[in-house]
Length: 138
View (cartoon, helix red, strand yellow):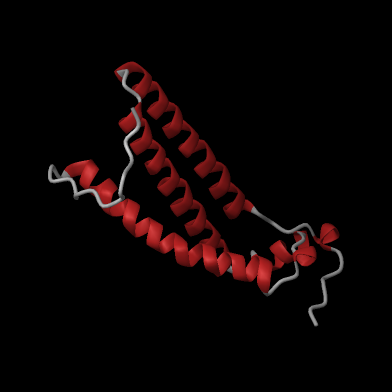
């Protein structure tokens, strides 16, 4: 039977990883609200979606601030989401063996996606011949 959560559960008293996870879930969620709103405004409101091209991304990544911003968004979104998945698996998967396998798979996926995103952000180098014309914002 599924439990319905009010979202107002008590902070774990045991300390350790579960307490850290409880605080992290709330802090990362609050930070993500601001990061996602900034991302949406920059990528979809102030910039025409048709202008979100390779040239636009290459120009943004010329500034280290945008690489750090995108890395922070990647890190918080991935870890926040996987923490939620971990909690869901822990709450609803009854078999200890299945729970261990599902948590292991989710941890492996977290590491793979985090590494792919981080490597992409660190090693991105614009290709001059592929940049082409820039959009003119009026």
